[in-house]
Image 1: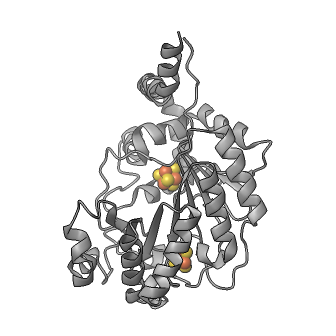
Image 2 (image 1 turned 180 degrees about the horizontal axis):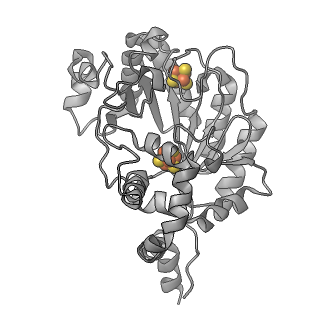
Length: 350
Ligand code: SF4
Ligand code: SF4
């Protein structure tokens, strides 16, 4: 029997706007209150509708930015639309709107009525110059008290003062952290945070060692659309700037073609199958010296180092035949597993 040569996507991410109430110096998209780029409600609705119909495999639609709450009533409208297709939805926010617990409850309940299933908050040293810590606490409590899934991403780099421990030790959060049965959906993550080179400690940027075996879980499985309707291969930090990850303007006519086209590219498959750290190791092996240092670097940093360097890409091209047998075998197994539901349906229908 034939399996599709590509994996069906699992997630749709709409970078709904570059406008933000904050202006964190190391924001990966350089968002701030002055920026005006955003997806219109018509654009967001048409992408959601198209993807829901074309890719039933998509389970979750993420609305991120910038700050999605600057979309005003359009944010509630797009959550309703996502829910009308039976999909889960997640908003990623800095919680500027949660200036009091009661305000936060009001907003969370309205979003819940529209069908929102999960909310993520970002905080840390840079965020807290613009949004107070108390807002994050109000926003967490409001969501958890209404049984909504919550994840908090804390800026994590070597030189940070605010650490996730502060949240773990906050007495206002202890009941949620202790009672895993009642609040199973509360996560605190040491999140991705990459600083500009000028502020990077020479030891490296990321304080949490990325395992050499970490693979990229975004490329090929996540359809990501920017506020100017660019199709991005992943939701990583360098997706806008890196031409290798940016497929240009997307329409209903080319979205499916772009998604499938990515599977013709062995480097994208390699990122998915083995991750950028393993690719960097291979480059170092080809060169017989450490051209790329991976210690204390975030996976996306290493990825960007590789994808934006012509010399590394040429080295990969010259040596890819050594990697191909292993990668093709892994890819074949993966695409069979990823398409497994289709296979099971076929078996059942026989
Ligand atoms: S809150 Fe998030 S989107 Fe806004 S400027 Fe900071 S990092 Fe960027
Ligand atoms: S590892 Fe590379 S492809 Fe994957 S999310 Fe990061 S930048 Fe994107």
